[in-house]
Amino acid sequence: MIKLATVFSGIGAIEQAFIQKGLEKEIIFACDNGDIEIDVNYEKELKKIRKMKNIKEKKEYVENLYKSKSKKTNFVKISYNANYKVKNDNFFYDVKLLDGTDFKDKVDLFVGRKSMPKLFYSRS
Picture 1 (cartoon, rainbow, N blue to C red):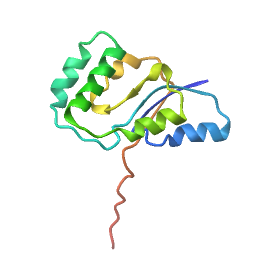
Picture 2 (picture 1 turned 90 degrees about the horizontal axis):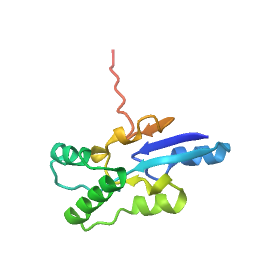
Picture 3 (picture 1 turned 90 degrees about the vertical axis):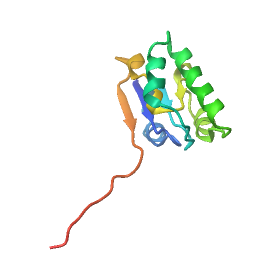
């Protein structure tokens, strides 16, 4: 059983790969803001978050921050949770506000990629 964590989780490409290959996995956490941008001081907010007692409190704080700063719905979260079981409902809104120390020694495979890399070339 592989303990999986993803950021920029989207539709769950790696999760689908596990399913198609018949590999057992436990999703420890997933994270995607659904392309919702909020205006906050991330450094200041992360310092507050790191002082909180537990993962649940941190998660709720960030979700409430998003709700107070944006009226948009995170459809990625809705879709992801409809398709995959996330341990302890650990779907987070923002990788920039995620305290990764909460998951130390709890994850076997960490996957995340925001976008495809740019390809550079030169002509001779």
